[in-house]
Image (cartoon, rainbow over all chains, first blue to last red; front, top):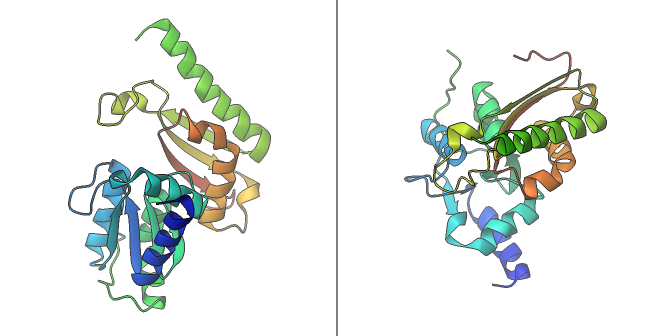
Length: 116
Length: 100
């Protein structure tokens, strides 16, 4: 794929699924601690999400960094909008803001968070 | 670990510190180099300068979203993130927000 084709492909992915996680490894077998944390949070919240393994394709790994203008993986998109990487998603989850965002966007999940 | 390694380790950390100090004027800046903990794991470059955790408290973050705060830091550390730094844990707070 050309660089432009990669950008178009990424745009298509985040348009087609409500929640997309660009990660190292898969949701079942994450290959990086940060990606694994995001997968755990998504699983805990019971969110149906599309995982995209950037290790499968170097052009996607570079392309998503350019697309978002964000230097690190994982990257989480909700309804086509960039939410953040591991630190931000974890902070939002702990503060209950991630659940709130999903609710606002009409995405079904377990309405719970870690603060108990 | 050799002395050479220790020196370069210090210099990368110092470089990060200097850039953040100059550009973001933090009132608190904690930098932890935890590269050792990741040495030898898959895809770890093993340079001793690959994994950092940063806690930064600065007035420049006031009224900014989490994503915007991270973008500010990422921009300052653009060169390091494209090269030396393999993983960066980041907590960015405004002075009036609880931070630990």
